[in-house]
Length: 465
Image 1: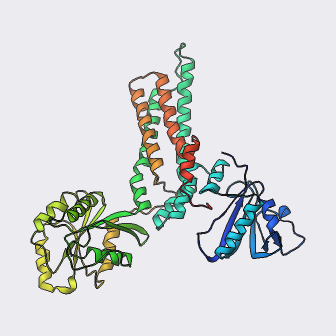
Image 2 (image 1 turned 30 degrees about the vertical axis):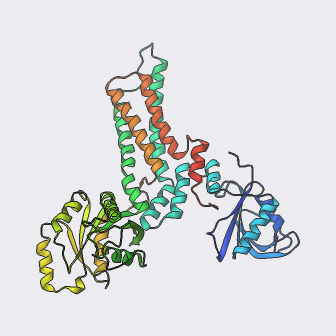
Image 3 (image 1 turned 60 degrees about the horizontal axis):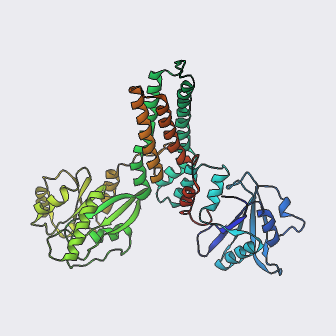
């Protein structure tokens, strides 16, 4: 890979808006832009203008026709996002204007940037490591306060710093081991085996802690899965539509309307929940509906929180049958009993419900999804069930599958080192396991990487970033 070319792309979202930003980066960025840009101060030369400044002027065609009045922001190497000479052109948000300016830049010699190429150049030019670059994409995609805080922490290098400290300790570790190999015939020992064993266990503990944080990180990034389950016509789809504030699921009095799984995400007080509306559980001979019910069972097993909806006006006579099918799949999960349609029952019927469900050790919420009664209470119960810890700016939480896989491999390698020290294994085998652990940690930050890995990572970025 090379940074020889100068690239350009529209960095703001597709479509029209108030303003748009076109980013240009590369060694010829100033020259290419100066050919299509006329500053209002006629004696000003863009190529001679100081860095970190903004210039007002017009973008014009080679025939002198004005495309738009724009602001041009200048960044000189190495003090830019990419580490290269970079210019950002702020124009009016017309799609036509954006495309015309981009066409003029391409005509001058710029190349159209690939997805994530600006971030990729930032990585290649040492402006950030690979995990920080990936955090840029996570920050753009963040949909809750927690996911935003997590991505920001990683982008600022908190995760990288943890890995750097671990790798430094491993490097010192392997240096002592390999020094002993050079003096093997003299039977010289440079490293105290007890101290090395303690150090290896400390490193294993830190790697394990980072790997274990993936469960939380994955939930914060993708949303807490919440399954809406129950019999047919108890109001699952109505409740989903209420949370989403749109008619996402079909609501009907006909039993078995929902036959497939419907999913969507909602931000509640800064926490992202992924709601899963499932097919109603009942005995049926309909093959298609039975397939939907089987998917319901799978979603119960995959969800973190189960909202078990019950029709308050018509409690099923098959409650034991239903309980058996839900309870055995919800072991270890937070279950909330949601009694729906309470606007249609009286106080006596409330008491009957309480007595009927006394056997269940689960929180109970009484709502009317249709009339929006007590829905805020249900949201409060969901937030309580989520048990999301308050993340601090310096907290390190792993949310990337690639990082998690590398950490688990590094953990396996360091565990072999611990076992080797306890069993007095040969020094060259110890050295190999330590270096393997360093290799997997280096894959996360990009200290050890391949073009294939980098291409796969940055291809998932948006164009212009």
